[in-house]
Length: 113
Image 1 (cartoon, one colour):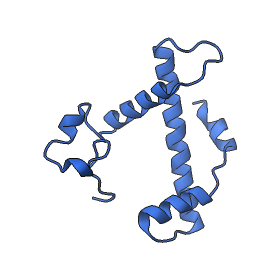
Image 2 (cartoon, helix red, strand yellow):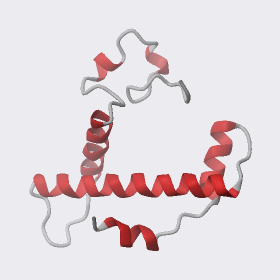
Image 3 (cartoon, one colour):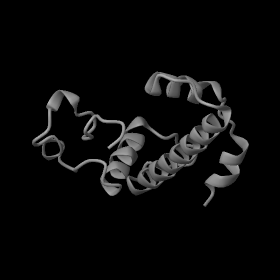
Image 4 (tube, rainbow, N blue to C red):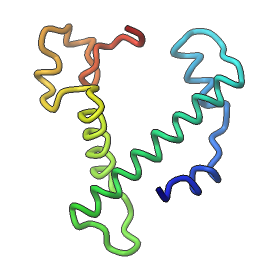
């Protein structure tokens, strides 16, 4: 796991998680909650980048110094959603029986179940 030394040195400002949580929850959050949210965001981003690097190598785009392309990140996010059961591989099947305008990315559109 090469991601941990890089994540340790990367600091996410607490303003952004607080601002997003305020918009989503419509209430302010404590600094400890903002720290927890930023920790989860860092782990998600590092996992996504690690998967994108694996996809880049599998596709043969991993020349020395080659940057990650948006399609590598999109494919990594798509595979993560499929593996975690967040959506079906078929977007039409994910929306079956649901109110289509509310469905975003194959999810039900609700924050909590």
